[in-house]
Length: 310
Ligand SMILES: [Zn+2]
Image 1 (cartoon, rainbow, N blue to C red):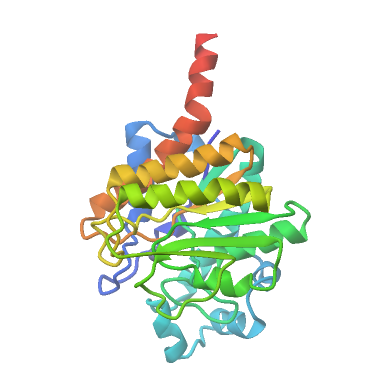
Image 2: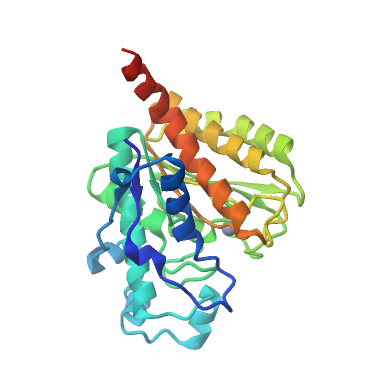
């Protein structure tokens, strides 16, 4: 069964002046339910990160400032929205959801977070709409608890996962692969285990060609027992911040490819959403929904219809 991390706290709304399209977190589950891709049983409400869990990855100083709401203005500004207790709480649930998705993926092959992919959060500060680094926290928890030995992060958000690269710089058990726009935020990039920089306007064909040249090799060389896949849709040509040229079909082909590779290699994959900032929210929601549809089709549909036929 496709387990999906989602709860009421994900629905936190930020003021209109912020560019972050929070409404997608409501629209995606609603659409998937309405069209019958999923049903309410697919959802699970993630628990909240404990302080101890946060401190596996973030500094005590940063956590203290979040907890006491004393983040100085100049440290809050790069995050992109005003820090409130509700927003901190939301982040703790989302990040724990990513960890729980990893555990569910070990059981079912794949699991998805309706949010997450907050890869711009560093150990000691947040930026780019990211407060806690969910994939790094989840990775640290898995390693610490003996639930994974080697983790591959496939980050296909159009922006480099600079927080991931920084946090995992000295962690050989986590391999960070980031494929992103060369001329895009963050302008001062960190060094991942593998960075692939794309030119502006890179289209479906070129994008998929590079991905197909890279991912199978990575899987065979890194030999992960867990994959985190950041399936952001800011690679779309319609994205306001993306600068690449993918169509929705190309974006779905990307998802299908990554999931098929993980499934063929029998490696559990936990999917986090990452960014999506197309002018029309419809493009964002539809492209994200395609990732859920792909997961259902690849992992569960053929199996279910086989059962029905039996
Ligand atoms: Zn992004």
